[in-house]
Image 1 (tube, rainbow, N blue to C red):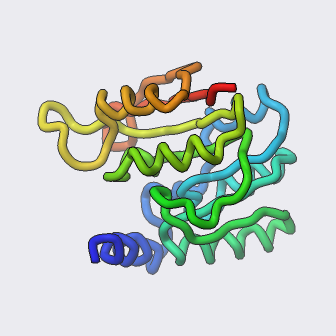
Image 2 (image 1 turned 45 degrees about the vertical axis):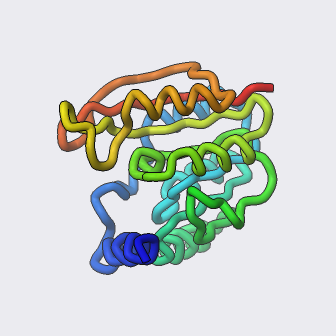
Image 3 (image 1 turned 30 degrees about the vertical axis):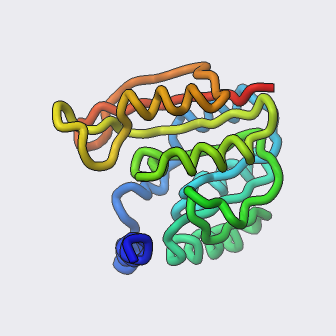
Length: 191
């Protein structure tokens, strides 16, 4: 029931336009990654309306994307078709990844992981789909201090990630639009 309510809530945010987290702008951190890594297989976890799926496909990547909001998936599929690109986008849950097949050189997550309650299941599936030596480019904001409640990253989440055979290769701290502390992380899977 809780999962259904979350799905309805996410879908409803796309009824009257695009939610604030789906800016339609590819961040410079993704462009920097593309410029410094050869094209391969990429997956956009929580792809929204497909902005970054399109950016990756235009850069020569074989791209798959999925989102929890089926309405966003439909919008992404239309944008990909209009751009005359080849990419696969479908509905899935990041804590289950039931429809994700194969291994990926890049897993992109802009604001999905920090909002998930069951981070352990997410990471179990992430490590399953990352190719040896593959990268996880992840953006998230931190839980507000001092309460450490609600969505966001906590120190314990970063410790959990490191326990999954993922090595932090870079971190860029900053602030989101609401002035919450946030960061870009680039993790690499073990070989």
